[in-house]
Length: 154
Image (cartoon, rainbow, N blue to C red; front, top):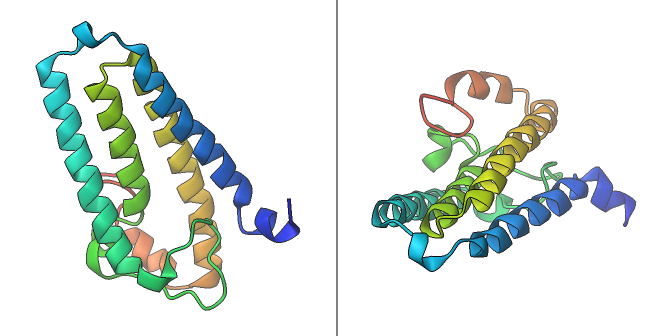
């Protein structure tokens, strides 16, 4: 691993990939006859929320998108679009996608892994926010106005 990979927060990406892989694989642990229609509908609602957050986040970030949590030099501080409502819409999208997959598949193990993924993203967001506060002094005021994952709630 290069020093640059580590400095940019690369190990966060490795752990994120492993947790997402766990959710995907564990989704296949359920038996198809145990799927309840209401769980499938709830899962589809989570998937719709995921797609909406992801698309809005990608459009708002544009060229500022990076897989690494540490912002590179030249990055712009984005506060428009969905970033007026939540600080981490792409993390929210991945949490919703994992939860939706778990519900659609009626997989308790995948749902537990989705919860672990949500806890992980909360920790990753906290680390990323420390870097953002150093890079953008106005980020502190932004944090006070805008919630992390769920508008007006958390």
